[in-house]
Length: 145
Image 1 (tube, rainbow, N blue to C red):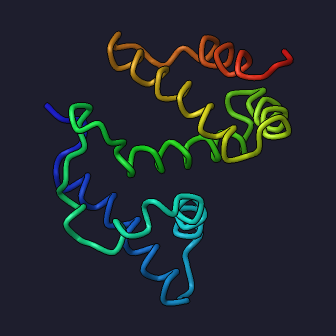
Image 2 (cartoon, one colour):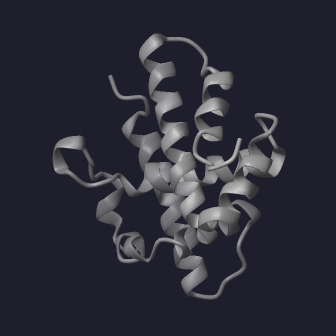
C-alpha cells in the first residue's frame, strides 16, 4: 500500500507545478511557493518536468534508475526547515560547517541522504525516527566533529 493516495501525491506535485508556473510568469508567490521555487531553481534538470502535467501521475521506481524529483526536492525542503528551526538541535551548526566546506547545495545533498536513510529505517522498523542516530550520521559528513 503506498504511503500517499494518488490524489494526495497528485495534489502535492501540483503545488510544485503551480509554484514554478507562477515563478515563470513573474506572479506573486505565497511563502511556501517561494520555498518550493528556491529549491526548484537549484535543480535546472527538473525545470522541464514542472511544465508538464503528466508528472502528476508518473511513478519513479528504483528499477527506473532515476531519482524521484518530487521526493528529492521535498527532502531539500525538509532539510531547509530543520536548519531554519535548528530541529533537531545542532543541525544548523552542522549545515553551516558542511556548507563552508563544500557549498550549501552539496551540503544539502549529503544531508538529505542521511535524512532519507533515517526515514527509511523509521518506516522499516515502524518506530519514530532515531534523532540521535540521524544527528550522528550528519556529524560524520563533516571533516570536523
